[in-house]
Image (tube, rainbow, N blue to C red):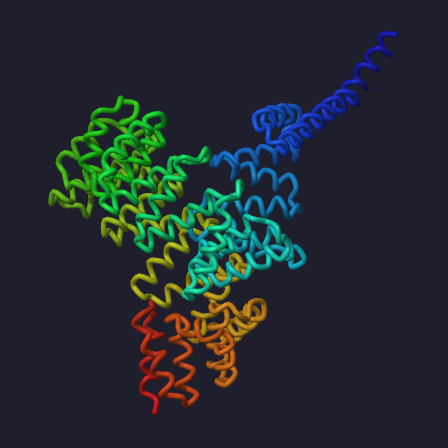
Length: 550
């Protein structure tokens, strides 16, 4: 009987307990999913957490938490999106959700989103979520025509999606055609009363009014946002920007009210203080911080913000004393770097600065910290130090795309075409599915007469996928020109339309092809746009040669 009892217990433990756990896990996960759909976010989070306690690998509960983290704008959303994709690696919806979150939390050039968008299977590209994410990525990369095409396709797939209507209108605000811009403004105006996207539409219009220096209308629209329940603290900063730019008498009272409002949140204090520094109000930052409790002025990045105020006022001796007062815990690399800056500004030798070496050591284990030091060194004109740090990062973090992208930026600044080509080749080898990266590699290869066959093949493939995109069309046309097919190159350019051909980046190459075709007089107009765009030395040689054609 004892043996039978022990066997029964063992069987219950082996089969009954897992089934029991699986039952409750699924029950809570499904309940969390249902509560999320109903908008009951707190209870959805509770149920998802309970489900994960039963089963840490529950895909549904993980996705619910990722959705909730995204809805709150939490940085942890990226981790949960990655986790959800790991649990269901073939789920394209999870992939696009991760790409969408990455666009929010990652910086230019948005490596995660670029990789995902570039590797989605062709059959899923006719999905609205893909087109939307691809459109946002293109917009963030300033490829406005490509973004417009993606949003148009997404809207065709979901014609009643007001968010897509808003996105398309926002892209069209960037057009050089006044009629297109006017139509986009009309769409945004019509969406202002929509409860789902009304605030977003108004924010887009406010940005447009600020760019037009139409501060009166911008202030009126901004005030409407401030009275809306979904108003954010950033909306107060936008209102401050408008009042400051228009020299409004309401600026100082509104600044004082915003300072009072910010005191409920360390993050808001930091954002407002950073805004004040950028607006030339560094002395006001110091005065304000002197009145705040110590937990504010000493908390995390607020200590950096106060140091920035000393920098803005060129108070180098005071800055050094402030920095030596206490450690900054996880921000020691920034503190040491600013000590090095204070030393340099007081005419002390900095080539072998102990403070700078300490900053490098403090940042060595973290790519994020290295990035900050590179940004600081670049801003302070320490270009050699910045390049050394990026080269170190390339060796220390070989699987990350940032060091190569940053080195490319450095090489571009000093017009080092060979260095740019090396970085482009490396990026293409690491991720051949990245369309823009592949195009960049092909264009530089053609410019330097390297790997011609590969470059031509890439140019053809990219052009076939997007024949009206000026970036890919220009590369393909240049490939045709290099192969002696000048007439075909001209046809490729002319298919883009006159508006696109007038843009300097496209016009220069069009002018080169025109001159090679014997249309020298017509080419002159386009070649003269060379001074309006960034050109590498090899490109300038091509322009000068084209100008000398007879």
